[in-house]
Image 1 (tube, rainbow, N blue to C red):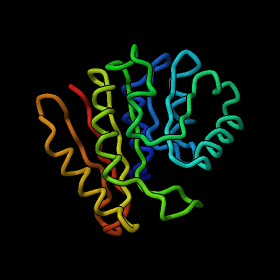
Image 2: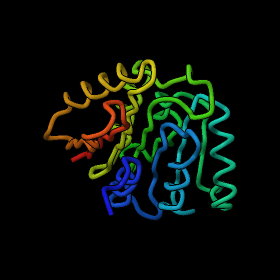
Image 3: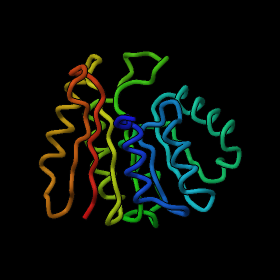
Length: 192
């Protein structure tokens, strides 16, 4: 047995808070792993909004969805834009009603490693995510600090999260302690 991976734990937390018919957001599409998970979770009655700045990420996500969940096109809406613009892309009537927003920060494996998420767009995206979230909703943030710019972004995200008022948000950190200091870890925020 053993502890589950950082990504699996993020998915477990989301499963506890989102259900069929809900609206959810994949703030960083990447290879489409989270988008597929979210689409399966909310079903065709729900909505998944996904964002990435690289066309390759949208293409890979679309291919993964078409292969594993052919009817996903009816509920998954992908945008080629920064996650900082998510609030404008999610319909107004869903603001304050989103069940979960998931982030995987860093870079797209197999793509240009110089194209990374940066605190200048990530912090505004996190703030938008909190505004979109419903009471009891969750934001999961998987942080990768082992690449150029990764530790600076992780520090900025942690600093931002630590300033959130406890009366409005609970926050946890899930991390394997006896591994590389640059191993990915999870921050999860629940809106009270």
